Length: 129
Image (cartoon, rainbow, N blue to C red; front, side):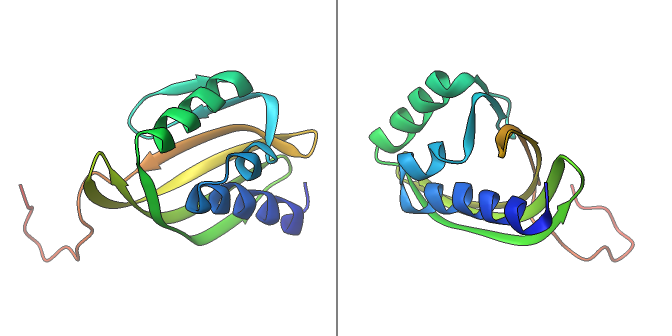
């Protein structure tokens, strides 16, 4: 997949989450897609992804920001880094991470997220606990 098409597809997926737009999210996904969230849940197939989206937004959760900070495209894969902010069950949260994406038929076939587990800091020779 070429760089511009891949970037547009991912921006549409991310933008769909930011806007709470189920149709926009689905417009980027292959019917047999698989999404792996950074903390473990796996959603296989469009029906299960739809259940997840409906439950997530249906509980009043919001994506307050999702900024893509870097982007790389290979032949049928892409990777992007991001900063994510949300309100989940009434609690604000923010963290940084990265996603690896596989494409098939011009859609997202697989997306796997990874996230940082703490705040980023400059190492000064001492380890924080």
